[in-house]
Structures are given as C-alpha cells and as structure tokens.
Amino acid sequence: MTITCQNYSLGEAYDELIGPDHQPRPAAKALCEHLASLGDSTLATRRQAVDAAIMAMGITFTVYSDAGNIDRAWPFDIIPRIMDRKEWERIDAGLKQRLTALNLFINDLYNEQRIVQDGIFPLEVLAGSKNFRSQCQGFVPQFGVWAHVCGTDLVRDRDGTIYVLEDNLRVPSGVSYMLENRQMMKRLFPELFRTSDILPVDDYPTQLHDTLAALSPRSGERPVIAVLTPGIYNSAYFEHSYLAQKMGAFLVEGSDLMVDANDCVNMKTISGLRRVDVIYRRIDDDFLDPEAFRPDSTLGVPGLLRAWRKGKVGIANAPGAGVADDKVVYAFVPKIIKYYLDQDPIIPNVPSYLCMYDDQRDYVLANLDQLVVKPANESGGYGMLIGPRASAEERARFAELIRENPRNYMAQPTLSISTAPTLVDDRLAARHLDLRPFVLQSNRLYATTGGLTRVAMREGSLVVNSSQGGGSKDTWIVDVRN
Image (cartoon, rainbow, N blue to C red; front, side):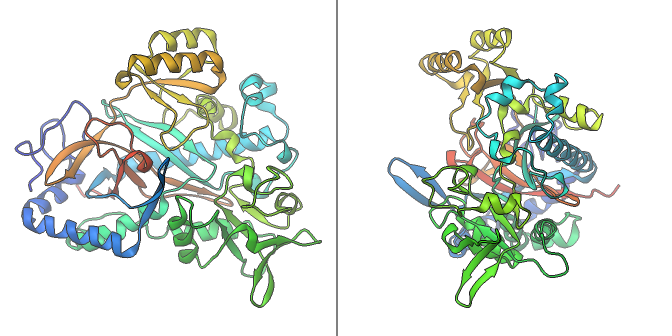
C-alpha cells in the first residue's frame, strides 16, 4: 500500500504526509517506504489486530443521544500523523507562552482586574461570562496558576500555517487516547520505532503526577492525590480510571470524600478517613461543591471550595479557570499575551469576528454562508454552524440566535484544514484533522511532544470530535536527520 500519487488523491488542502509534488514529506518518508514494503494483506491483518486489541482492552468513549448513552470502541486509524521536530519546537514554545499568559489573565480577573481597568479586555465580555465564578474572587492559588492542564486545539490551513483553534481549560480530555494510540502503534510498527527518531509521549502520567504533587499543601511527605470523577456513566470515565491507575492516584467520586471541621478533605476508606492533598477534578464547576455552586449537585463535595480557599487542598484545574475557556475570550488572547508578557503570539489565532460588536455582527450576518459560527461556551462540536454546508433554514435560525444574544457568538472563516492519508475500508483517502497537545503548569511548564490527532472520518467533514463521528491517529514528532 504505497502512499504515492498512484493510489492517493491529494485534495486542495495541505496534506500532512504528502507534499504538492506527490512525494512523501521528509519526516514521513520512512513511514511511506515501510507501508509499501508490507503489502495490503499484512497491513490489513495488523489493522484487524489493533481493532481486536481496542475491544479487548475496553478502550471506549460514550456518545450521549436521545436513544440513550452508548459506549463505543475508540475509533483509531493506523496511519499516523507526522510532523518534523524543528517545526514542533516552535509550536512547543507557542503552547507554553499561551498557557503562561492565560494563567496570568485568570489570576488578574479574580483579583485586581488590571487588564479591564487598562481597557485591553472589555468589561462587558467579563460581565457576560458564564464561567466567571464570583466565589473565587480575591484568591490566589499556589503559583498563581488556575489552569494546570490545558488541551489546545491546533489546525493547519491551506498555506501550511498552524493556528490555535481554541483553548480547553476546564476539564480537557483525550490524553489517555493519545497514550493508548502510541502503545498500539508500537505493537503495529515496531520496526519503525527501532529505526526512526520518534519522540516519546509515555512520560505524560509522570509529568501529570509531578504537576499535581507540586500543589500539595503538606510538604515533606508523599502527597495523596485523587482523581474526582462523576462516575462510570461519564463519557470520559475510561480516561479518569486510566490516569488514576497510571499515576498511582485514587479514583474517587464525590460521595467518597468529605470535608472535616478543620477544612481538610478526607477520603473514606475501609481503614477510616485518609487526608487528600490534591484533587484532579473531572467535574464541571457547577457540580463541584453544592455549598458554593449548584445546591442540587450530588456529584461534588460539600465544603470543597472552602477547603481550597483555606489552602488545605490543591485542586486542578482550579474552580473558575473556565473563565478563559470561552470562544469570545479566545479572540482576545493575542492582546492578553502582549499585555502580560510583552510578546507577540508565537502561534496565531484564527481570524475571528465577535458578534457583540455591531460592525462585526453585520458582517457575520451578511456572510453566514461563508463562515463557521460558534457559541461561546459549547464544546464537543455541538451548537455550531458550518455556513458553507448549512441549509438556508439553518442559517436563518442562527441569524436569529445571534441577534437575540450577540455576546454568545463569534465567527471565523471556514479554513481548509489539513488532511492526512486515512485508511477508510480498504483504501487510503484524505481526511481532515486537527491536533490537541496537552500543556501542564504548576511550578514548571511541560508540553506533550505531539498530542491527540483527531480525524474527521466522514468524507469532506471538518468536525473531528468523537461525539460527532470522528476518529483519531497517533502523532509522531520525528527528528529528521540531514
């Protein structure tokens, strides 16, 4: 199955493996030659083995629908996405720059609000934020860091430019699939891992553990870390249990924890109560503490916010970090980087239009057939309009939504995001993809070498989310020797 112009059709988009000359890009040359040497039958056999391993290992995600919650095997494509290490080094620097600035921004919003007073960030955007938590005002968490784990979505446009599409700062998911994808690829192509300089991702659980451990309020002893999950019916439960196991942390639900009279968080065990130092929470703010947020929540821990504010427990990501996880706030990130770091962004944003401004809203309404319109706080590919592929009725409905609540909508041009060869049935076809690297921050910064590549399995689709029918690929950052 040679990946060349003879059996792979390049589209108009930038292709991650094949150049415009129909030859493999330098970083992908070894892969393409190896695939050619295997032959179709060998590759098909290995693909079947990977599919069987996914089922046997229970690597699943949950799709929520009107018909009920459905567990599905993780959709995985065996042709990896490949990038050169030299290009990645610039991306790595840009990811760390971005998270550093965003944490300074969040800390400022909950304290002095200098960026608002100086006229860089509009008060009306802050006032309209669904994720600003007044309960967190006047508090500075350890190291001044609120978002300890960030999943930043990257896309490449037709001309090869890498853009940040959005930042995920609340409870970003997908890293367990990145790790499992790599393990499956090592079994699938052991020859390439012996002969090529493919940078590792396996140290992520250790890096995550160390990031969390740095938040412990008790020094001089090994911290007790707990992963707080909503439970087995959550779509990311596989990841919650996976990371807890890999870190040697405890997997707990809200009912397993209690806050005592000294404002310490304790875990209920068969041997009695055991103090918890750090909580990696995978529950949204609203459900985290019924005393502070939604009183009807049965998922959280009463008094947890109080314990955190009194310095008795570390929480990652911190309550309130989602104030920067807003697609309208996203449009201001270049200014945020300039304001706090006095630097230009290393990785640019996608050009954006904010419907809260009259002139930009007028432009969006007049060009709905050419734009992608996104609500400020939805995720998973829900609630957005891809204008060129929408019906006239869908565009008319979105126009009304925008007019009713302009603060809640922003728009971007429809990018021709990059493609990569993807095994569809028994043939290679170009499919659009994005990339979600994961960045950690506490007392230091760390970014994965690569990340979770998500691929739109349906022909022509730009929506890569697994909840919308997308799949995934392993991401290889390759050190190309000249």
